[in-house]
Image 1 (cartoon, rainbow, N blue to C red):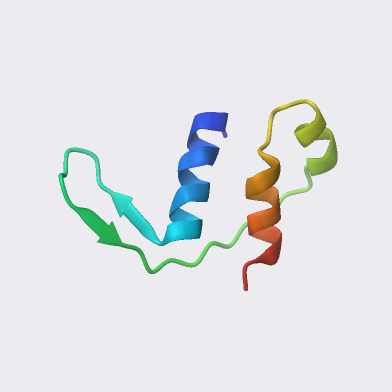
Image 2: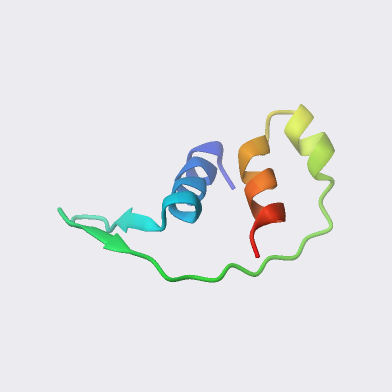
Length: 62
């Protein structure tokens, strides 16, 4: 996932709000995110390919 998309996902996960494309109003999100991967995030973070803030957020959400 590109870094720009990671930043947008992080913002929605933290704030719970998003603005749809072409819309002028902000909406509340009620989402659950389920993800699985075998990627080595420590390496991806060091290489600058994954945001450390998003990694932390995904690991701490319940």
